[in-house]
Image (cartoon, rainbow over all chains, first blue to last red; front, side):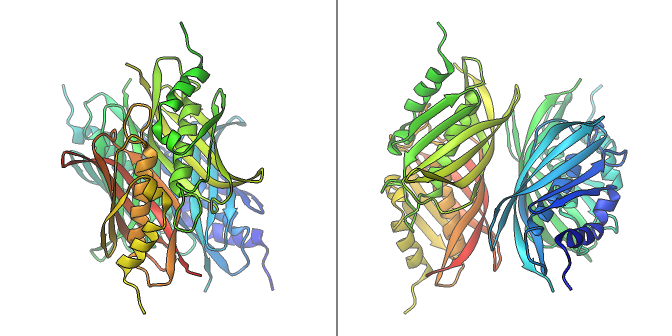
Length: 140
Length: 140
Length: 140
Length: 140
């Protein structure tokens, strides 16, 4: 019995305890595009009260990884091998949303990106840009 | 009255709620070298039970930033502008420790690195390597 | 007497001997967007006959830097502080064209990107993606 | 008949026309460590007379790639998938020397670094730091 990419990704997401710690939500799963959001709560801040870069990174890394996974056959996982983040603006506001995407899907490597936005009263502002490399790994 | 670099860094570290969420400890503050550790607890894992890359990144980013701050005059903060992380091995074990350092301290930019190690029964294994750029910002 | 951004960039480009070695051309200068191309000649190849990654990097770095410079007041230069390149496909074909752009222009830093394409009989294929950081420096 | 790693690397290096354009020399081949140097000649400069970042990148990318190749079985090549360069100081002087090394050699990926130094009357100064990812590819 085959499992849809969305369900595989949802199961994997639910198994990430860090995403629960961040109260994160899987907002969207489409082929090659996955969005994850989380509140900028009192538990994720840096010393000036903005969201810590580690929150942007964590959401963006997961969104980018799942955007790669959404294009793979069942029976695969992906691992991040490297990721770069540019921090473009202070992450103020109510929530962060990370939009992951695939730049190039190869058999051996998937080059991915994520754009992270802060959301304040519904208005979005980009706070980070990430590019990285995922490797597909056969499960089991 | 002047405040020692160690005290400034400790105050800033204590003001980062994400570090508390991770139960992180400021292990060492020396000129140009700052270490931060945290347990690989049940709240910081990815889907295979290893520490999430976001934990390595968060500890490494803070350790690297404070290593830059340790070289600056009082009255400055640093901001991360970009950071790259290479994930070298699965982050299994009891704790992670991130050792930040300064590669080049300029007036306008500080190039930093962090090496992240997993610790299992006292044995260390490197799990990540980071390099990035910090900018000094005058306070207030 | 003021000098237009295009003329400042053209003068700077002409002063780069590496661009002459590559027989490179400044193809386009618009606010925040600069294109540079060069032939994939017999002097710029790697061991399999494709253009060397160093050619893609050189063209992309210059295009990205000038796209930042195009937004600055006269009397400034820009310096690359760091740059990451993803190599997406072998650089085969007649020419490379690097299209530089600005992601975020700050007073202290400009975050830039470049996309590098190979051109074969007029058809373009992306071979590299770059993101980096430029710092504005007052001249003289 | 087997070919020594040094000879394989030397043959590959000699097949890179960009290295000839830069008048580059393969200075050292050891397991996991390869050095390449080139003069800062009149054909490789940026607009202020320093060596162009593209020269540092090209030498460092090749040195890092060959340091990875030096650890692989005969019958493999390596390809750069991504590389980040930090530019630490202006590249003034007589020559550049790039010292490539291996951070972690995996079956599927090799994480590499290169440090680039300018040499002036025999004195070395680091001008760039690079980290990147190579993938081994079976030949023909």
